[in-house]
Length: 445
Image (cartoon, rainbow, N blue to C red):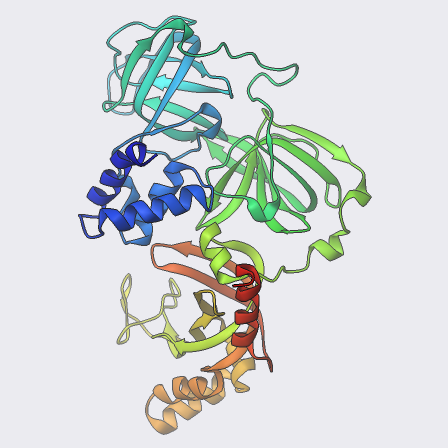
């Protein structure tokens, strides 16, 4: 196992500019793979992002099955059989017409469409088993597509190097899906099966390759949590119904796992009493920041913790009337010097004993927490000739105080952030509660 991971440890180290020891990288990589059970590609990208690097600089491809492929991977390796192959002519914008190779690849888990944008060293034929290195993936019409570029190497293998792909009845693209709960969804998972109640759904038009296409988006939930979904085919889904979705894959938006599925998926309607009613599932689940950090975020969750600090930009701020960005010294970074419009906000660090998140409160919530209107804050700032008085008053009210907040938690290179939708101050010992929870997880000494 250690020898197998060595090239990936070196790859991560190189992407981080040798700023982290290989021993530390190996320990973290092993933890992601063996404890959190995420894919090698997801683990590598997560470690690079955690230490401030750019995952796009990773160069060593990850060997995968086709079922594990997700859009946006920069370098993947796989062993596959050519299910279909054909030539076609394309005319890239601003370039001459060229002949490219397209088709379908399959392995024991699934099939995937592919496009070779550069000439291959040897011609491909139906039935050939090939080893692909440093290919990349994109999303095309809601599906994963494999692309061969200038860095991609393609070589032929013996015909018996890979079992023949034999799809089941009515399932030409995927093998048996993996059942998962909503709380267990992770970016990069594919061919999953989720049983959930549709809480909301709407139809919207998007543009794909210059043509309008309908996509059906909404929210679904089970007893463990809620998530957004996108259906790239009209399955005639209705709010309130319980369905089993098989053959979906998991993407993420700013770290929040989301389900996507298309015509390759199978939808089965189930009895309504299989899950709690929508009124129950619409409740916001209580979560711990440590779990959200491992997942990458969460939709409509509740956190309890201590507000341990106010970040810069809290209190009375002035926004650009054009783009609503907060002004710095009377100027917007996009529109220059403008007459700012006053606003109130809080950017606080919330700690629940397992981790920390930046919690952002809008004007309405800030007024409620401060028990003072925006106009009153402006008047106080004018009297003191400084906006610091508002920030200081917020610090007196909020810092070191227990609070419960609800909202979406997103993540980026700077960590976790919650856009708070509702909040209430608590009279409980959150730290003692956190210690009790953590002790329960660890078990007896």
